[in-house]
Image (cartoon, rainbow, N blue to C red; front, side, top):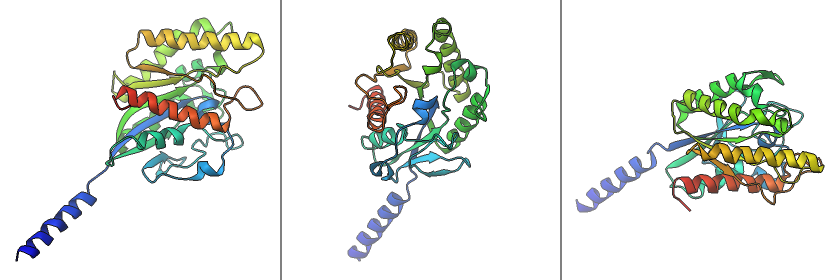
Length: 258
């Protein structure tokens, strides 16, 4: 009788333990080409993690695999998303799954995001808003990963960038219904050339840091030491993987997990 009781207890424990619904943490990936990814997808990037998911082109949830972005079929490449998801997952409890929502489109400027422009066939902010809303149905929006600015790192555009950034991030939070939504923004790479271009990229990075001084929920992710493809614009594959890990480590610091 006692053995039967023990067996029943263990069976109930296993049943309810295994059927426990996983908590989904959702992150939206937004910006331009360095977030969309221009690295080469290599064999190591095809290794999936069954606890990291992505929202695909058809607005369906699937196990995440690179390339995550699909808006520019002829240009798709390795981004930092899966690396971010895997690194983050490895540090969290087993009942948490990661969902990535890709929304980045190459060549998009911040005024196009703020103005909801049609760019390369994508209505930028409408697409972001629609996909974030779908993400909210799947789980809890934990943050936005933002990498953008190459299109705005010009003398005429730089003075406008800080205010546009503030407006855009305010819209992100409003449409997420979370005034304290975490936003992680990656620096532009420090490999740009010629010197004039490099100076503009550094100036834009300075704007990111100034904006973060007045936004308690905006965190800047360093790209120091990361390398580019031969174009001196886009992160290479190794650097995309490292950038994803840096995004994850920054988020873990925010939630006090080191």
